[in-house]
Length: 316
Image 1 (tube, rainbow, N blue to C red):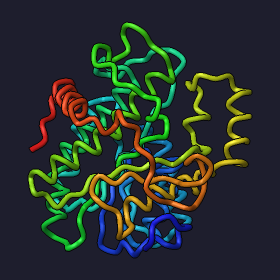
Image 2: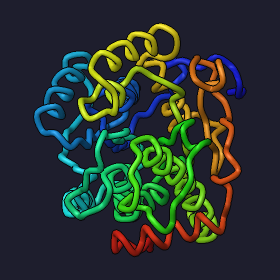
Image 3: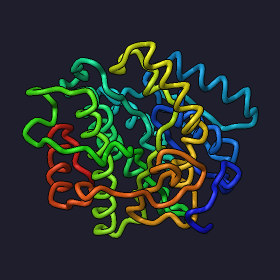
Image 4: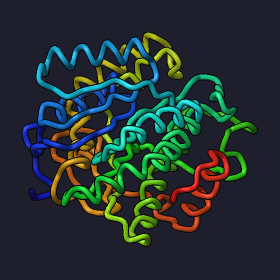
């Protein structure tokens, strides 16, 4: 596979025998990634917060792909207790985990909302929930590393919004001042820095687990349509039509995630996205541009320490 060429769902390699967990797989990018991976033979766990929506997504996928190996598991990334419960159930199965896709996200609630643990919702869900999930599932990823010649992958979904993001270490929870998009951009910058720092730590530990990141450009997903999004219903409706028409559908938006999860030429610490129209659209997938802040290793270590302190999770 050569980078910087058109890459479609048809390019997803066979995934027979591989086990995948995708957070937020009931809709949008997560749903289409789950469909493509299941269609290519993977066993896919839909890890979703809402039981009804998760069950509905499972049913749709089973109808679309009758022979798919699928299961739904409840996971609320805004609750560390839920993350812990999910991971305990998963590890009890003693099954290797080949791909973990940290996809779920919250975008720009109008008002500051807190998770069950008292964290600002976007930082708590997008960053801390996935940090804890990855740390607790690392034994299953390492099990896959021993069981297969294929390297297991942690794929963390970031955003082009990281380019204007900034980490406010004196106010990570936006308690002093809350701006919907400011908090979102911070969380997406943190996602990318987490992926890079995880990769550095895995390599230092001589682990075969690979950590990479991706972004979908701008896609017509539920992030823009959700009731909590900081825009009026009319604006949300117009945005949905414009994005779908001019930029990416949900399915096209899933391509960079699928590329990062399956392509042969993906590398440690890689960051991949669409290359059309300022990285906002297209089926041409390749290395995405990284803002200088995201490559700051000192800040990445500080962020990691903050995540460990806030979640109580230390990676083994």
